[in-house]
Length: 124
Image (cartoon, rainbow, N blue to C red; front, side, top):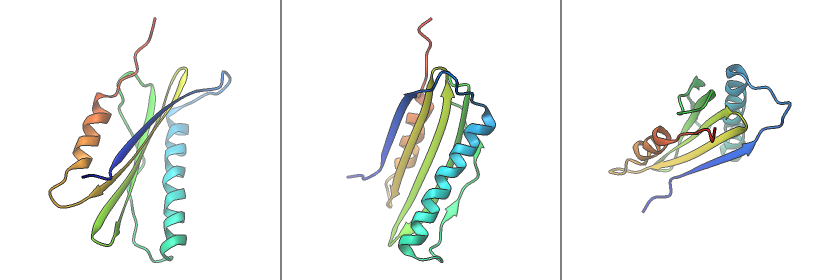
């Protein structure tokens, strides 16, 4: 049994909103920062958290996208939270995943397969 999950939200972007790769990366970076602060408030300032870099991310049919992840341990379980934010007119794309790694379980690989298969197609 797994407790890992992935959530994908497509939200209409405002008509006047302008996105760029830089803006998408800034939004992605801030999401990770919020989780790190929350973990340190809940578990103490010295709670060990590994924050990955914010990087451009390739999603099929998506003009701008970025990824970032945070890794930490809760007891014997390694937790990985990741964010992929993107924009393809007319949608903002929010993909949030959490993987709870246990020996012999490869949920991160399965979530990567889901992300690799994700595609936005035009109705035109």
